[in-house]
Length: 495
Image (tube, rainbow, N blue to C red; front, side, top):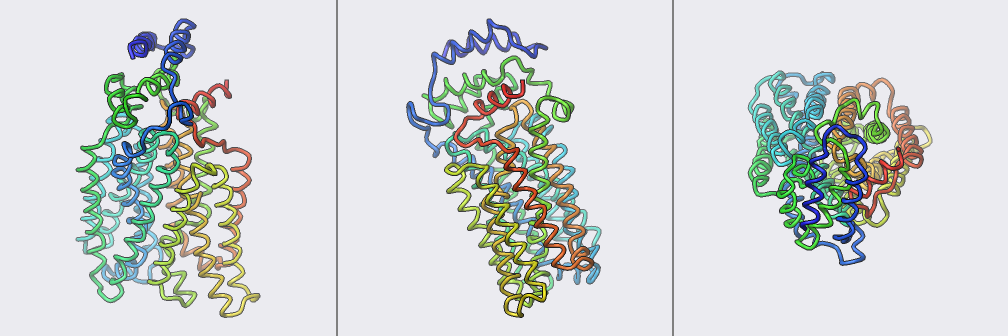
């Protein structure tokens, strides 16, 4: 350990304005790395660290994903009773605003998520994201006007905008490489549980006009749990190292991985940080520098994810099922179950098949399911066929999404971004996500009225096909590699 610490001291001493590290520094670092060579993700030499050490921290962080899913679906079953109670029933623009105002707040939150995560650390960022979700849900639950509802949804959205990027950062940085994909997918399961919980919670809203207020109050409980339990979790060792707190980073690695893995982990951190100034991450580097390709891949994946129409299903499936003559309550539960089932499949396969295979299979399955739904609303289908293809196609669509297009983009981006720029890059890409999500939520019902189901599904299906082609040509596989291995290989390929 002394050799690692001496090398770290050398590194910090030369960590000034140099983009290219000195030969002496690289030589000293390589000697230290050789002296402490341990498994770097494959675990073939001395076995993998225990996944049980990091699991509790991942579970607490996943509360953010649970809240994310809950707030996505909370207005699905309750929107009709909310509109009646607050006096805007039949106004599709107002109904769209109840959905999309939350997404507008999420856009604002995502813009600042990188600054928050890098400025105060991952743990405090989680707690800061919980605060507006508690306040916003309380405002929505107690309001007597549309304006109050929109304010509450906007505040909730700010917390939702901060949460996903911090969750992706934190889970990626505290997870052993061999289970990082599994843990990243497990956050999608938490999202599914939250979504399914909101659908179950909203069932009584059709018979009880004021029940929607209870649905909003329920969400304050996991938000408070997140703020409290995060006090018991470790800070990201990568963030501690960037802040010059190497001793604390070592202590965290020992808690997460075990003492025998600390030296190798610290050596890899130093190798990935060769000569880079940890405090100089700038937006210009993401837009014009060597990291532009990473941001382009991440932003495009998030854009195609939303242009597939997935969140229109979560927001307005009740309306779509009603048009097909299917009871919305039971149909929406089926949507939630399919989402959970697909996410479970992703957990099992993420670290076996890899990110790229799941993405291609997921978008391809979504394109097929959208084709089935388009056929359902043409003259080619019988009344029974219309019901079967529309509902079955939608369930297949959700199942396909959850196996890849849902969990992979945020995990993949957090893996391929250089550690120094990871938080800022995620913030930029998620801002793209929320902008498109906002307009889908705002305009879906109007587009459904103006374009019809056939053309709208064809448009969404087109973007799914584009996604398959894009992933095949641009996405790199990161399965089983440590974050430092991924960063070093990507940087070397761009030089």
